[in-house]
Every structure is written in C-alpha cells, then in structure tokens.
Length: 166
Image (tube, rainbow, N blue to C red; front, side, top):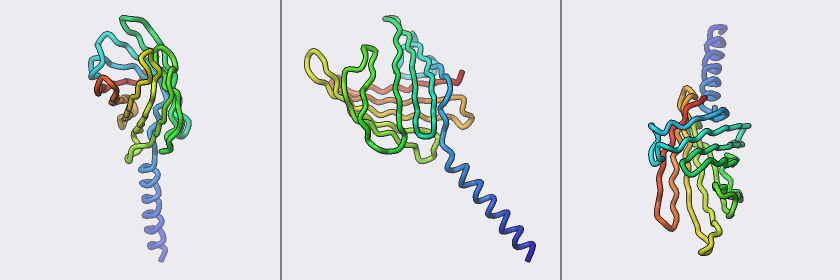
C-alpha cells in the first residue's frame, strides 16, 4: 500500500512539473542587438538595439535605430492576451495614424504573434497598412528572431531580424 502511494505521488509530481514547463511563456526582457549579417531584408548599414521590459503579458520596448540617413528611437508595447486593442502606430516621424492590434502567445509559448491594421495620414490622403510580426525566442534565451510582413499600397515587404542578447 505504501509503495502504491509513493509511486502515485511520483507520477503526480512528474505530471505537475511537465505541465508547468509546458505552460511557461518566453520572457523577452533584456537588451537585444540586431546582427545585420544574419538578418534578411535589412540593409547591412542599419543598426538596431532594442530594450524590452516584460511583466506578465505586457511587453514594453524601445528600439534605437541608426541608419545612413540618421538615428531615431521608437517606443511601443504589446498586451499579449489575444484581444484586439486600439493603438497609435509609431514611425520615425512620430505617431501619425491609428490602428487596431492583436497580440497572442504562440502555441508553444516561446513567442508571440502580432497582427495590425493601421491607417496613416499622408499629404496624399490616408494610407492603410497591414502588418504581422512573429517573435521567436531561442530555447537558451540568448537569441530572438522577429519576422515582419508589411502589406501596403506599394506591395508586401518581408524582413527577418536576428537579435542577440547583450
């Protein structure tokens, strides 16, 4: 009888631990530096550094970008709960539009998927853009890949940015 209780307890413990590991979500917090040589669709002269603070399902980030045309920073945030929210798109020129965004965890919990529909005010009138982002954190937490697809009036642009943790 004692042996059955011990075996049942061990099985329950193993099951509980495997469930908690399966439910663990990626934590993107830290400073990330883009490796242009491993990235796709980004000019080699572009440098990016991203500071991320994650608390539960809220991810806040500031991205500093250096280009041949100048430097700029963009602040943004995601609430990763699968619900559509209003947001103000951030561009190098500053906020000049409005949009709707949905962010959710990937099925395995090691990334997020973000979909956006935004409208920007331009001198020629409003312009709409659809974007999808997928963040994937490596198992060791030392690299991050962000895949971006943007569809607008000039067609679709795809990029893949490879970051390493500083």
